[in-house]
Image (cartoon, rainbow, N blue to C red; front, side):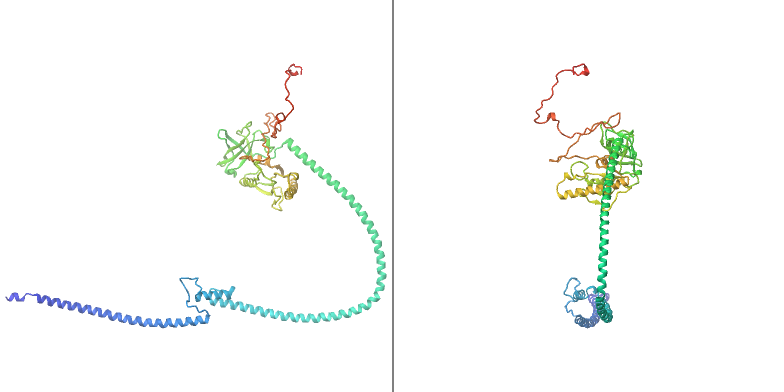
Length: 509
């Protein structure tokens, strides 16, 4: 019974639980009370700081209002960061006023603007004072000059009066001297008239001699040009050396290989004219050209591949043939002068741009050029010894053109041609036609377009070369006209054979 009384019961557990809850509640109450006190102190501190900030903000607002009043711009908003372009702010209004009133002196800040305005005001004041001092000095100088001039006027007036008195006495003597001079002038005039007549006769005689000498000189120059052209046409002397040699030919693919490459500064699209290997030289005449090639690939320092763009069927290209172009020289810039129209494919339209591109590819410079309008480029250019060729393009004749403007252009082209021809002769520059020049550089017409209504002949090839002389057998160019035997409406009957043999074969004829 006593043992059972010593065991803890529900009361004990309840008491223990109550004590523990009391301790926990006490601790929680203490913690919450302490935190409440800390928060209360913090709130009190924040309230004090807020009051201080309110006082500072009020002070700043008062100062901003004072500053607005001082500036004279009383917008409610000082600045708008969300809309920098808002003009209804003190900052934007102040900037607008600085720009409007400061103009060139306006700076990024009011202080800098005021400083610049002050500098400008000081400079203007100094300039004004300097000019005022200069004006005062000039006024003083003008006053001195006025007094000096007045003194001179008075002196001149007195001298005039004295001269008027002396004039009356001098007039008599002067009249006598004047009469004597008139007589002397009359004598000299008679002599002068005789000298003028003699001079006129001498001038007329000299003019006749000058015209006769000019006529003789012109005649001799024309004869020299005629003989020179005649000699060139008869002899066809070589004036250039070949640029390279064809090493190999493949006729199936119209491909050749030449002994030029990147070491020779050769470029693709370069064109060459081809001459026979036994030819006495290149550039003798366009009829000596047996073909034309265009470089397609650079293979080695001294090897390139080219395609055959034109070939004489009677004289095929073979290994060892010579190639040449007058607008290319390894490591050297060639120069040419050009005048007149450029129609390379015969379609009646200008190919000047294409011609310029061809020259650029070959590294050739056009140092003087006169276009279809008679404009020379450069205006003050001259043909010099550095010019390789003077190329003559299409120059119309005055009777072939209509309209004053067109005639004026043709006259201008002809005037330039006369000047440039003399320049070329003086400097030993060879004058060649555009067609010959294009043949020399190996140009090949890409296409020939027939245009309706175009009156342009389409000439046939002028015969083949003689194997014995290596020369043309004659001009066999077709003019495109129909033989009279087949003319429409021809009344004359065709001749018929009478059956008799020729005397050469023992006949009666």
